[in-house]
Image (cartoon, rainbow, N blue to C red; front, side):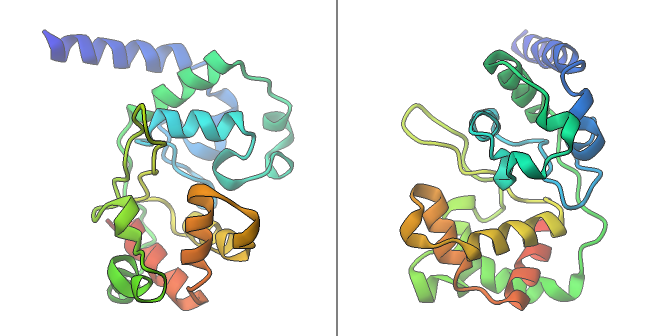
Length: 198
């Protein structure tokens, strides 16, 4: 009975969000698996994480100025944003086809331990060893699932974090800036391919 109720609730959430997703689908995909490799996959992300990012208008590290005009002009209510986030969370995330297998060995070293020797943290310490992240709780903000994200998106996100001044950012953003700040371009490309292939 609980399974039937869960499936019914998921289906009703997805249907209710269909009209709202019109502007999202062309970049992020109808099922949240981005059709544009430089855009993040929203499928299987913690709904609270997506809602928070959208409400702060820095949707997954992109400024509103970088969004297509029709999207930047779209005004969504808090309820609309929450509904969209819940709908995308119900979809599984697909594995990208452009993973470079030759990058995976170095990428795994970076993800598991490479950065920890320099700053005391590795990617797996927060995002989990399988890239599944940590869902939000009453006490903690979500750490996003990064497994199977698109390689170009991951590379751009890590380079963005690397460009930040750690003294001017806080929280998870500071942690990411510290980690990415210790990675060179080759390491960023390698870890992006490793994460995408998880």
